[in-house]
Image (cartoon, rainbow, N blue to C red; front, side, top):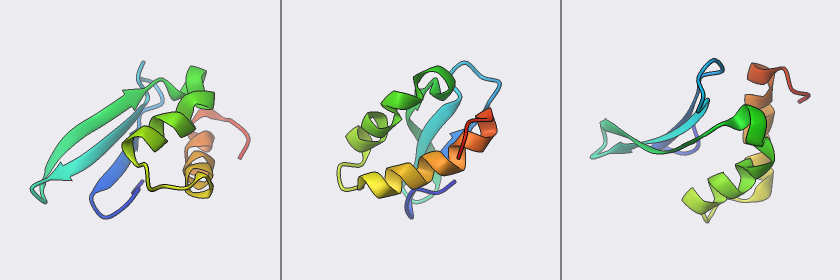
Length: 76
């Protein structure tokens, strides 16, 4: 799922670090910015995203969480 024009979130429910944030460097080469265990630490997700994207607001973070939660059978 996209965050903006150059970054996206990859969700891998079966992995230990099941949420990864990637950015395209030089317009085409992906680079992982960070990863976390969303299933057990989802309360820290807003701070995790905010540190990488200080211009993002909490409504946008909440909307990202609403898109991620179904992968882990969490309420939307």
